Image 1 (cartoon, helix red, strand yellow):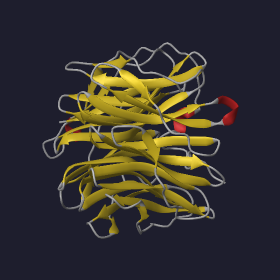
Image 2 (tube, one colour):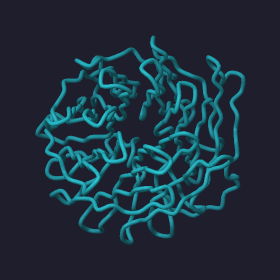
Image 3 (cartoon, helix red, strand yellow):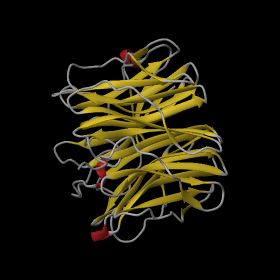
Image 4 (cartoon, helix red, strand yellow):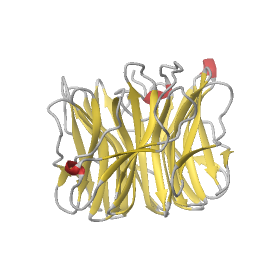
Length: 393
């Protein structure tokens, strides 16, 4: 039986980490601008080292931007436990905001969705100790983050990994409920209480939902993967207004251990892009799916190196502009950005945060030329995590 961290390079994977406290010489909001080679099609990129919650490990899992501000979420080590971490982009810097955690054990925020500068919802999980994991939901009202009541599915372990809010009165969160085996989990909010939706599963083995996108209040797409035996397969669920959640056929790319979709973005009901990777016996390769309103198909996707390449997040500002992010391996982990402008996908050269391995978890685009990606820098040799964002403009 597998768990939600298989393979071990996705959102939520950093709930168990080295907790060493190490003093660092990185200045908050320091900017590393890309060289001339990091400017493509009129866009330049810069790494911004953001504020952290102390000198122990900090990691960002997701970012959502509206107008002139962004919210990035993850977790930060505080003493013996991991606490929720929220960072906000302000006019000239990034700042850590106060955010609640549940209990005295580990807490993690995996995803955030902002409808405006005064309404965001973040989701994740918190440890209940010996009994496992439980869901956590928080809301931003423009002034403060507060906890929302989250329903408790059956089973000892439940976590939310993605959230989408098409309006200030509707949000959809997705993840997994660890029964035996793991089952898909969808929680829905219509301005009152959160409720658990009935959702199908692709197989009798483990099923995980990793991301969700809702272009309107009557249509959502959720993606993840489902194991059939030892091999993972693409898992897509769709919701169309008054009907229930339904399985949608989606292709795989094969590989020794299977296909793993992680992020999805739907600018309209007739167009979505989902990203992830598929795994051979030795490496991971990028994987992109396209929805045309009727069916999912695979698209050719480039790879930056002959070793492993992974995509973990995607955002489409329009129907002809999408950006996908992740990492590739070449003497360590490096930032990977791929861009689509209505034709094929191309790799965009980007700078990296210095001092260790770089991982881009997700991206949010307020226009075809303004994107912000949330990053995780693992310093070497200490393995302490620092937060950063990659800004394209």
